[in-house]
Amino acid sequence: MWLRLLIVLVAMAVVLGGVTAWNAIKAHFIHQFMVKNAAQPQTVSTTIAGYSEWQPEVSAVGSLRAVHGVQVTAQLAGLVERVEFHSGQSVRAGQALVQLNAAPDIAQLHSLQATAHYAALTYQREVIQYKDQAIGKATLDAATANWKSAEAQVKAQAALVAEKTIRAPFNGRLGITTVNPGEYLQPGTPIVSLQSLDPIFVDFYLPQSDLSRIHLGDATRVTAGAFAGRTFTGRVTSIDPLVNPATRNFEAEATINNPQRLLRPGMFVTTAVASGARRRYLTLPQTAISYNPYGDTVFVVRQGSGAKATETAEQVFVTLGPTRGDQIAVLKGIRAGDVIVTSGQLKLKNGSSVAVNNSVQPLNNPNPSPQEH
Image (cartoon, rainbow, N blue to C red; front, side, top):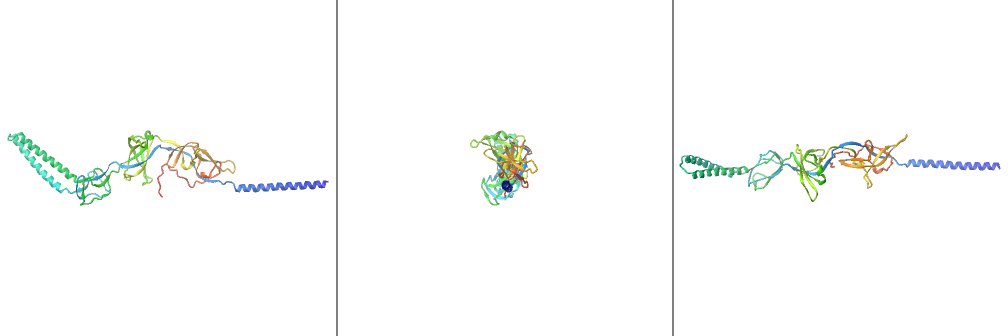
């Protein structure tokens, strides 16, 4: 009986040991499988949130216009005798540009000058005779009228001769001309464009909601795609008192310094007008923001605790402020010094492990320039 009982107990012990060993082996393989297939840390780039000074600005697309700009034309008809400039030349006010044939007019001027000279001599003789009471007052008045009429005709003819020399009305740079010597010009025929380039106007439109943000004398800067990295400065010089009833926009004008004459009339530029005092904002690259219908979020990197601590991403809701170039202001949700994920957010969820790699950073320029590739 004892022998049978001992055999049963030994058999039960063997069965229980086998079950225990099997469960231990199964648990080991399950653990190895879970470790092997556990979520790997996601590679992201990060930045440290910090404060920066911002100058509030009102931005718009503007069009450049010359302070003085005309199409030089012929006032009188005539044959071109000389072209005294070349295309693209800088000229001074009063500089001769085109000389029309004025020989007949000059001859007529000489004739009138001779007539005026004779009329002046006649008047002087009549004055002497009048003093001697040899002639009456009516005769002296007639001589005076003839003399003054002859002088007026001389001045009119001299003005006509002067108009045969076409001159620059102001300082500026000439455009391209197709006028050649020997060509007959009619009155109003375009000869060449003349533009004053320094300074230069920029005209731009703003919504009526910005009326209180822009004032005469506000500092203005413009950038042009043709000159990447260059900024041109000036000030607001005029604000149109009329708001367009169709668009509810108003027009403003700024005068921009252009000493190197790089900016040209007709170019479009990006215009930014300083509005109010500088402000201090907590700033992030715009790529750090995840925009969602239920709210805007960022991922904050948190350092875990323990010997094998890993960095994890925590999703945080934020309140956003104005933008500036590649940057955006964050009003609420994070603090200065927080480590914020700037790229790789699409791979993350709340609590995901992350591996930081900052070898490549997204754009974070407050004043980016357009790039063409």
